[in-house]
Image (cartoon, rainbow, N blue to C red):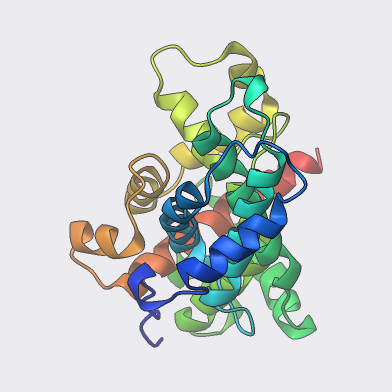
Length: 265
């Protein structure tokens, strides 16, 4: 498999600071007393790039890095327009939520794969469940490849296509269905939220994470709690960034299978 394309925030820009100022001025021109200054808006642009950098793993053509930055920038401008300082919420927190939501919405809108790939993804999930039921443990990617009579590289490709299509929701939580990052944080916390602990979804994914192979489990923790990038994790593991992406995709595929089993009762 070719090495995963490396994206850096420094390599990509969408609009000049002057252009952003004009856009921002239009976005909240109807407000008599805009709570956020034009200068502050440009200071939050790095946050847009940072959020996009965290999700480029899910990126698939024709969607580009610049598309996600543009979506995040629009989310920032909408945050400026809608921000209500009287609610006592810090603007930085509010902006982060709106930017991240806009970026994930853009990803979801473009996440699709062919019918053939959908069939392969479904077959892999079926084989994974069968082997797990027979052996009582998670099958290796090599076992799945052998069972299907395909190369392990094709299995990894299916994982990554499935991740781009279906698994963004694992990162995009709600109060009823918390994100994977929040679930792991709750498990690690000294005093986890009682309502979160009682959630069947939380219990299901927590158990599924514990059942992952050691390296997958370590990667999930580093990525979602330590906020390390794929490149940084590659340095920690002393492997290639593309291999880290494969391990991540495999882990999320396994978690998604468990999640679907839970949803189906």
